[in-house]
Amino acid sequence: MQDIAFQLVLKWAREGEDKDILLTDDYTRLTLDTIALCTMDYRFNSFYSEAMHPFVEAMSGVLSHAQKTATRPGLYNKVFGSTEEKQFKEDQATMNRIAQEVIDRRRANPVDKDDLLNTMLHKKDPKTGALMRDELIITNMITFLVAGHETT
Image 1 (cartoon, one colour):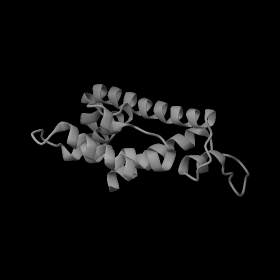
Image 2 (cartoon, one colour):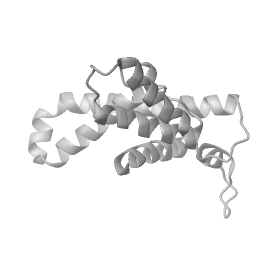
Image 3 (tube, one colour):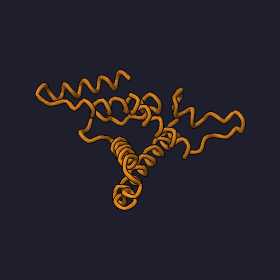
């Protein structure tokens, strides 16, 4: 976690004292980078690019869409929401794709860590003895990142 905090401080130092700091953007980066590193040993490397990581961009789009559609009448969403719905589905697909890439990378390069991802990949259900399916792991990973971001 300290590594991510140091990256934020270094980013601010690189930009200099005359540059405005967008705290909400930087704290989003800090939060998601920390959660991903601690739970999945995955780095978004958000402080090395001006643009947000594609997962973060997609997550922001999904959350924005959910907020908009929840407060509008259903008929409005059906009549005027087709473009937004298309983007929403693309954003969901992006998050799912990246989560699957994280799973595939971990399977190809196993690590001996007691983190959330290894728990979901290797622990068996005590009643059935079954491992979690990738689709369920992906859903849980995304939920964990979104919920962690929102509560932070």
